[in-house]
Length: 504
Image (cartoon, rainbow, N blue to C red):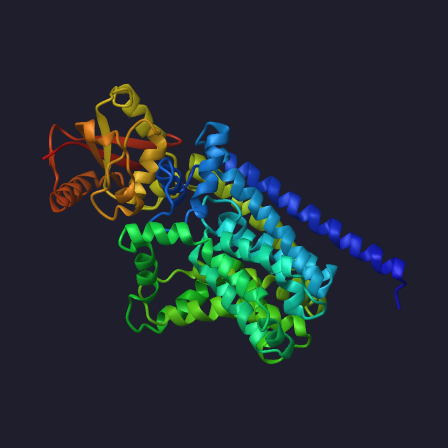
């Protein structure tokens, strides 16, 4: 049997290894955040928060507002500035994963849980890097879990103050993304299915915690009430608006495996199943229930088709990482642990290569591959458009404004051209642009409608833009359109068609 000193030394070794892993991935993401242009979703978030509001069409406010706060502090909307809070939150989330896993299963399992989280592509590239709601959601969910874990594990009583703080943390998670409510459901199921948990439910503290969390949603409810409940209707319609389509379930499983890497996804699914039906320790059941609620819900929803996205279930897999850490520490073959460690380097290298590709088209040029129509313009910078508008004097013209074809184009063009050019609601699928209150628009008369196109398909794009403008109403074409070509390495990667318009 190892001595107490040996155990403490081993625990300290795993703590140091986990901390080094967190810092290493933080360094990689900081480099990526400085080099990679904002993808369309990020640019949209940055642009619409130029006019902050109680909530937004797509998400509650905190999913977007951390980027805006950082832009104000730095005085810049540069990618590094607006991404920095999300990058830091991703690293804090990794450390909280270590803490909750160590608390439940030991430091060795904590290290492997951090390794799985850090290596999983979705959490490495998107949730812990991009300006998307998943970063603050994940951080505040882990804070909530850390605060209530003593009572959920039933190994020592928690304190009333921890439950009240947990209510605030869960409220912050709800203000980041609506799916945070599923954590509350999971915690209730854990308490309601154990004798000690039911005794705790007979006290006011869990209920006060839930009330505090729901009270934090007040700004979101006020905004929705003022705007016809469009945000809640939009999100619920995406999940439940389809028809029976069983094959979508298999597509979602495939997508989840890609987002996590198959050798992380499979142990996560197995350990959640084991924790639900054959737990070998009480803590396994706790994490399995917390993970199973969002995973099972969105897997079930996927059967009904509609707009189903694999990342919707990722909060469940976030809460399954402690179980993956336990599996790696206790039963995983040595070869698989080595593979997981090796994949961290491969994923980091792949992310840096993708960053170079987004910034310069390095990979496609080196391999003589054609760009992908309809995709490249959502991830590459629109610097040629900014240069074109500056040369034409449009940026300095106090009478000009943009009329993008969609929210995606509005985000990319709006970010590239800067905050001095007002943006009218896009003519198709405007999202938050339809609710922006920009007082400058009323006095401006020179509109510039635009649509992105694949080189050689500009004429088809012109026809589509004309059709959408006519269908939306309120504008008529004036003057001749022109084309701005975005290039990387001397090759055209996409084009932007600009059409002058005036209001009817």
